[in-house]
Amino acid sequence: MFLCAKSRTGSNSLIFIPTVYDYLGCWQNHGINFLPEISLLHQKGHETSLLHRCANAALLSGIAVFGITNNSVCVGSVHASLIYMRYGPSTACYNGTGGPSTMDVYGLDGKNISE
Image 1 (cartoon, rainbow, N blue to C red):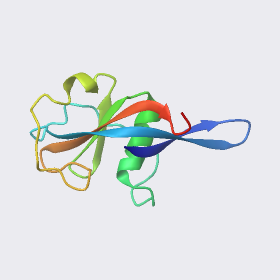
Image 2 (cartoon, helix red, strand yellow):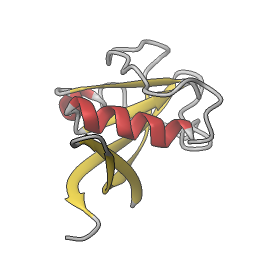
Image 3 (tube, rainbow, N blue to C red):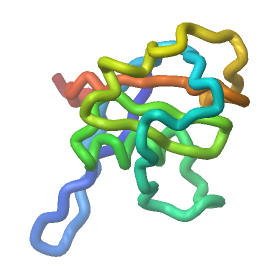
Image 4 (cartoon, rainbow, N blue to C red):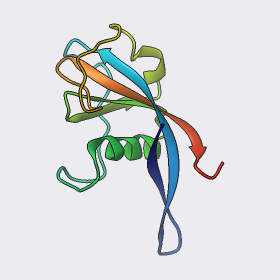
C-alpha cells in the first residue's frame, strides 16, 4: 500500500488528499506501450518520485490502474485493469518503475487515508 495526493482547487487554495494505491505486480509488455502514456504534472527532476507523480496524474485523470514502464513512462487507461496482464508476469522490473520490456502496475482503490 502506497500513498499519493489528489489535488483540488478551492477558492484560492490547493488541498492535497492522501489516497491509497496498491502494487499489482510486474508485467511483460514486450517493449510495446499498449497502454497510452499519461502526462505527468511535474517536470522530470522534481523532488517527487516518478511513481508518485504517475499516481497523482492517474488519479486526477480518473484512471484506476496505471503503470510505469522502462523507468520513465507513465501509462494507463480506463481499460487498463482489463489488459495490463496481456503478456504475463515478469521478474525483470526494478525500483517500482518497470524495466526493459516490462512495467510495474498499480491500482488506485479510491480510499482516502482517513477512511
